[in-house]
Image (cartoon, rainbow, N blue to C red):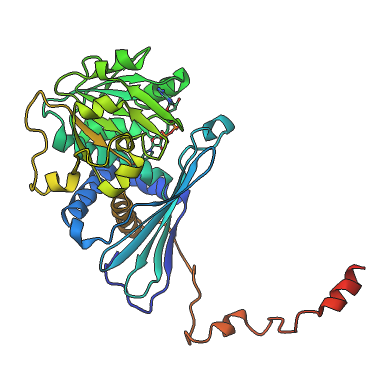
Length: 365
Ligand SMILES: NC(=O)c1ccc[n+]([C@@H]2O[C@H](COP(=O)([O-])OP(=O)(O)OC[C@H]3O[C@@H](n4cnc5c(N)ncnc54)[C@H](O)[C@@H]3O)[C@@H](O)[C@H]2O)c1
């Protein structure tokens, strides 16, 4: 996709779920994970070029629906995403998403895309990018707690981008772990199914928590922490929803995506406002040290930030163009005279005055 579309061009590329799945199948998941990780990395390095804001969240008893906007001088993007942990009990995904890429110069929407699958990819890419930066370089064993929709993506990203060779997996739902084992057969990963989180975490170099439960959970407790571990806390991502005990954070150096958002949503929500954290972009850009010793415990308190979706949307758009996938739709009207919106309703429009109140009463009587 060219990055400077004609200002008069209001065509929108539409990528539905089958289109996005075809893109991932044609390119291959490892290439998509690596491609999105590269873009996130590049975009995090130009952190100050983005107009950033914590996402807007609407909470209900069973879940949350969020809007995640961000923009730079050329592009605006937003993602719509939900989180409803009980959904799977009724056959619906916990997380579903779609998003838009719009031209800042005109405001025209240029891409409308399903983002459920890309969310799993960008989350795994982000997690692996953080771990590649923060975990011990000799990390080969990862505990993976929560084996639902996101889990396999995390496994492949950590295999390819971090060098993980053994997974110690646990889920309160044994069928979820069995599904993960099935899906990852023949992928060069040794997988050990564990009866508890404590058993899975024991001896691991990296611990990924990616559970879904709308409560202040403590999946990881202080006695599970071993020197040198890196924690990738992904499922504690909204107010009232955590995975790491506060003492785990106290025992560690904590890294975040966008601090104002993570203070509201991350495991960090349990900590006082002055609890010290470091935004990951500072480490990626070499401004701040990440891990400073092999014994240090590091935590990436992931919540998912809009720049990651901006990167994923650009990746999708480029791949769709390259592979000739997707449909060009008229999401917004295209007009010969942009001041003549009225003409779009055409000659067939019924311009009769609405019936007077008395005649409505007569008709319905
Ligand atoms: N940080 C981010 O960027 C980001 C992005 C996407 C999803 N998420 C979060 O990741 C989590 C997982 O998402 P998903 O799509 O895989 O959900 P999912 O519902 O498909 O899977 C979650 C799994 O966690 C398991 N689980 C729940 N409580 C557990 C516990 N105490 N111990 C072990 N396992 C437990 C469930 O049985 C389920 O199999 C959600 O909380 C979601 O909000 C975060």
